[in-house]
Amino acid sequence: GAGVSQSPSNKVTEKGKDVELRCDPISGHTALYWYRQSLGQGLEFLIYFQGNSAPDKSGLPSDRFSAERTGGSVSTLTIQRTQQEDSAVYLCASSFRDREVQETQYFGPGTRLLVL
Amino acid sequence: AQTVTQSQPEMSVQEAETVTLSCTYDTSESNYYLFWYKQPPSRQMILVIRQEAYKQQNATENRFSVNFQKAAKSFSLKISDSQLGDTAMYFCAFISGSSNTGKLIFGQGTTLQVKP
Image (cartoon, rainbow over all chains, first blue to last red; front, top):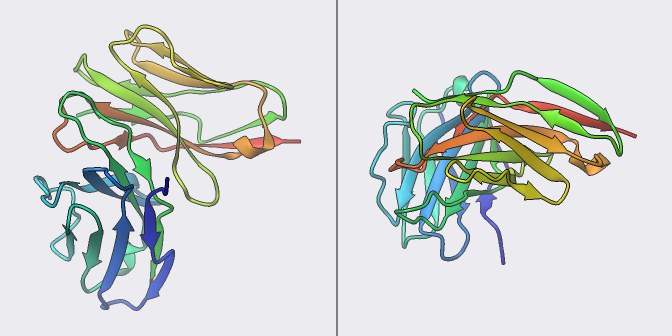
């Protein structure tokens, strides 16, 4: 079946603008994750959704970052008033979450964000 | 805090030969999961292999196998009969069995170049 998809593939924006990054998980996957990949910080966990709720938002770098998930499917990561340090690849992953087992996460191709 | 360390930033191997990528981790937990992911230039993070800590047998997937040394907290990846398509960045990742967020903790990655 179809894998995790993300859009846009690449995004160039000016400092101070808002951006929205979209993730479509694998159909039937209950859990969705956002990670950020940057040269300086490596791969960082940002947020996790089980269904439409995000129990722990402490991984978001600042209050300029927010995320939502609707219908237990599509998720949007929004960055307000972008800064140059937000430049990175934003990866989305999904899994069929089970309380007893940590299921494998399957990743999308990422969105490369460049803030000028 | 749990950490994952990949001490080899870059490696190279001749086509058809065998190469081993190193990974060590630090945790006080006994129940956890370990993964190797491959990230080619396309950015798509692809699962290579998964190991449950409670399983003593080393996981294998075709040409890929791991050497899981629980006491030493070591999780190396062996690639046999290397192919040009194996050229990619490889990430070792850890997840706690008790994690409520599904947070994967990644190493810094090893860039592998397979030479013809």
